[in-house]
Length: 260
Length: 300
Image 1: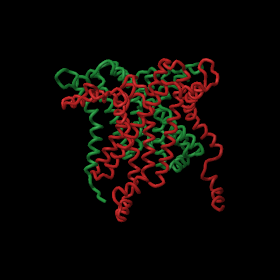
Image 2: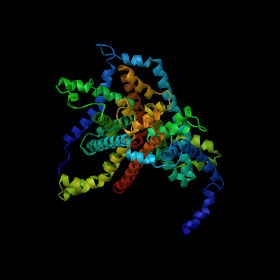
Image 3: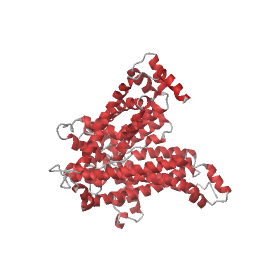
Image 4: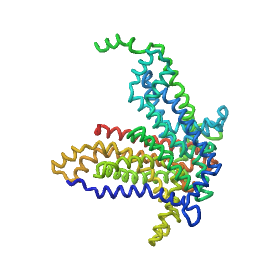
């Protein structure tokens, strides 16, 4: 049996690299061609100085930050209590947190629109529904990241030590537990960030300003602007994943996500 | 029994008092309230709506029957299933080869970590920007098409289009194979080097090693992940919508169009389409979980 024949490995890797980089290269080259005959960053200048772009992009940032805050406030206490006090609910909670895998975003938004556009729950226009939807989409990643973080520290001992020093529940959660799992929370947050910044379906159907629907609209309107936006979007994804790797050090599983 | 007894003696000191139990329940309440309001209740609306006559609200199987008889809906499911099959099998095979090449293919160490980073990015880089990236590459005036034309070959003269099945499959592969790499990597790590050495010592050929040792161990994991990829592409919407402008008849596109304006001519059919989708996804996730568990037995 022969081993160490790396030729086919190189070949497969070469094809993979081509597949990965060619679309990006094409987009980048295209984005430089906005001025006839010369390569320039004109499309980037145009895009970044366009007030509509700034407006939509800023809203996406706001949605992302709100989603992360809601996620932390909702999932940290829950995961903590499940681990420490009510382990009998673990199965139910894990089932619920994995449900978004089974319910595609388009189905979720269908349900949200149909549910909240009738009295008594006529709140479909509220930004709360959008942020809640984003929180649902990022829940499997955020919750799992937090739960993994809690597993790596001794929750019980920390809690009892804090209690015996007279700490209340708020102090324990936010001054003891939270700082101890900050790496896990950061990974979950940047993954949520990447999901929300690239997400198209929820904002589109709930009629809220956001980056991806704006870009989809611009694809129909002009050629060079969207290429600059695609590169910006790619850079954001790359940055988010890079930060996760940097703080997490090899948490490969933490990177699985998607908003296709 | 003695263990139990000592546990009982220690219990009051080690564990907080009983009445705090109720506070713990209150603490998890916001989570369940949130999940109920924005996940479970909307989902149940879909389930209920699927079995309801949309004008009279009466119970009916009509919508579910239409899923299997309405030619438009059946066609949409069929195309979604086809594209998911093609991209999950294709992406699965290519992703496996890539992961194996990087981990056990004799490549330098850094290739593995770079591949993992790329895959993390690529599996998250989807939707509208991805569609546009492929438009600049493979549209009739795209970069690669221009290169091929310069070489005297125009794929568009040979039946290729970016905006239909083939093109969409190529685009979907971009987020399919990286997901395969990320999920299958731990399984490949679990293949012990001793197993190769043991088969070598027993005189096995490379083919025999794969046929009788490696593949039987990896197969549940490979199949399971392919099923997950199937679900991943089955639920995809934004990429197809941005690429084809809603011209390709996928289930997700039909649901999106139904939500904008009642294209199916009956709100009940929209609910049933969603329900069918959730059922397919549930089967996919269950299949993945079951097969993954089978692999874990070996790779511990």
